[in-house]
Length: 238
Image (cartoon, rainbow, N blue to C red; front, top):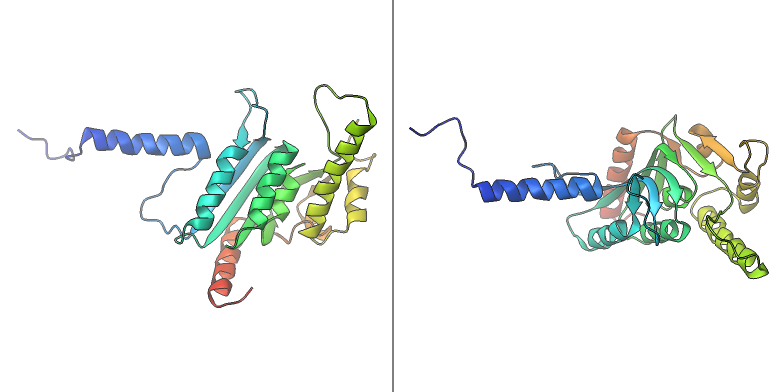
């Protein structure tokens, strides 16, 4: 006798669907939600931003070679009207972070970023690259000079390269936020705030008052804002 309580599902189809969701969860930290509106796409940038060097397997990383193709696909997808970027990152590869930030700021679709937990180091340019940015009340952002790990060749050209890279970060952040370059450098080289280091930690409203982030808020405010930007764009606004 046939069991009426068991749905008649092709095992191959079931395995394919489960495999697809597992791959999405493994690679991007997200799974497809059935019957949910998909006009807003969420991208998460979690852990350390991995660039040209592969991090140890125990590290939680966001690989830039995964994020950039997603952004290209979103730009071309007519069904996606806006992009929400969720950040909880310690920073990472400078050039990889700047590449993601440049991609975000050049998108034609509305973008909103939300810093949860932390948006440290090279996470700062990514946070400010969106059209509008939020930070959770308890989230933090660390601003510090560019650092190199491993072997550093002790010649003037090495320090000139570091200086130029640092200026790229300063220029990008100040262009896409309201903080002044002089103030950003002051926060970057502050020596009395971080033990055995130089730099500044900004918590929630401090990041807003400094002009880095637009507003203190959470996921509700971020979704409302991106819908507002989408509606404004559809009406021909900016």
